[in-house]
Amino acid sequence: MKYILYFLIGYIVLYAVVWLHEVGHALWYRKYNLKNDWWRVQVKPYIFFSTPGGVDAEVWENLKPIQYVLSAYGGLMANALFAIISAGIIRIVGEANEFFCIALWLFMTLHIGEIVSYLFVGPIFLVSDMELVNQHMPKLRIPNLLFGSILTVAYVYMLTLVPEEFRVFVVIWNIVTILSMCAGRMIFTAIAKRRTQ
Image 1 (cartoon, rainbow, N blue to C red):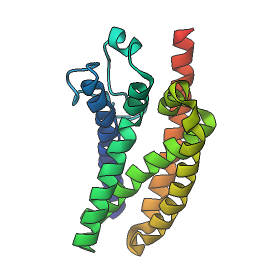
Image 2: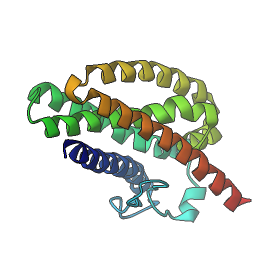
Image 3: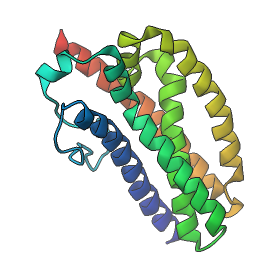
Image 4: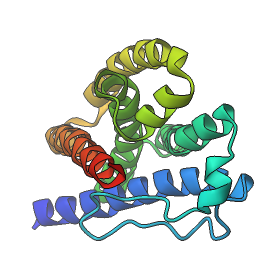
């Protein structure tokens, strides 16, 4: 029963992390008049192929390079903000209720994992948001990879700090999530390229 609850918590937290990532993009879209309803993002129950939703195509075509880049980084900014907030809550709360703790640790590590999957893997394979960044500011590819490499080391270290009673579950959930995210983005990018050709 405990592991069923872990799984449910893992799914809910992962859904929230992806939803907040997409809202991060949508807030920049709102700022640049691409989208009015920033909270309306597309995150299906199966989570894959989530997007911040449709945008005004005419406005999109006339953005400046920095606006494309900031819109692409918007999801990562949201991930970073919520990872920092959850790390602070973990420090304050300490080891409270087991299920609350596992939710907090998953929330923090999955946010960091999403950043790592974009900044470490994204510059190598140029998919999704990192492909957009590379199109408009290719000089950021190496800094993204360097920062992603450093963050990957910190991320692995953070996973070792997860309380022992649920560390294995959190680590496995993170690994499966990152592999799925990376594979999903590669597929999503390949489909998007086919549609534009």
